Length: 96
Image (cartoon, rainbow, N blue to C red; front, side, top):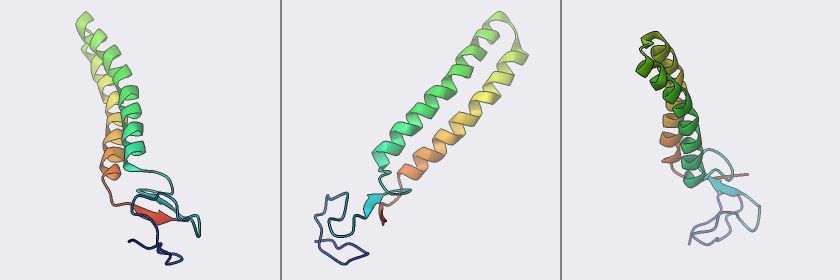
């Protein structure tokens, strides 16, 4: 049975919160599970799709410069989402 790293009390394997000290399990901080971070990465990706779709509209009308500008703008949220997704695969730790 695992132990709390702060109080050394026995806790259940699937517990998210230590009953003794209130420490929370997470990937990047207290309460940030891999599932929550993957959902947030999906939201950021959806935000990045908006300028990309508008840019595709520019490309269809023949405005290549508008497409390049908005595709470059869409790369920023995609890079942020990739970083969040990679971070979500990290090992969970206990935070107070």
